Length: 251
Image (tube, rainbow, N blue to C red):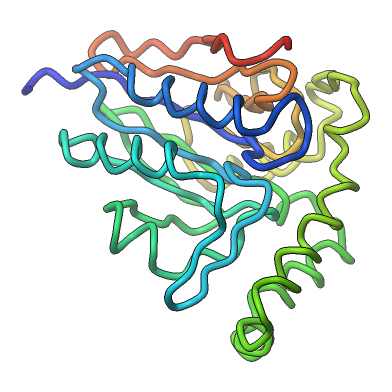
């Protein structure tokens, strides 16, 4: 199909998080992907799609079969899939790229869609939390990754599930957008002083909302997919960027 004009921006689905029947949530998310319209051009996954992801050479985490199949189905139909690692799914090595045709983007990526320039990131590395960045740096260290992969999956995945219990989405509260007080907004303001950007789109904060920077760029934080399920949809024909809400949430 030639007239592919729809571009989706999604983050913080946290598939596998043990809340609200995780298997049912995963099935609903896969159905959402399978039902994207034929004029879909691309889907940008901006981190924490999986609450935990670690690849061994011949093994990946269980529980995401439908979603992985839906992603493969999209790429088979010519839809471009892009993935930015979040702090929960940082350990993607080659499976998504080689098996599903997904392109991995760096944490802060500038891309142009239909003549509109977007700055995309998960956002966890940009908010200036020193200890978080030290921990994320350790997670990215090749030596530590090799040591972790030498452990039996039983222990690695058990550790991940225990870590997941501290996810702030388990507290039962939908977080509120902070606008200009958001640390990512301050980062966007600093970045646009020397870079031309039309829209900043981030995840991580779980606080769906939008504002405008001093230079007139759009600033957006994507929603999480436990309580809100808000995502952004860009139409490259009309140059419109609007909020949409999936029907997965509110169990």
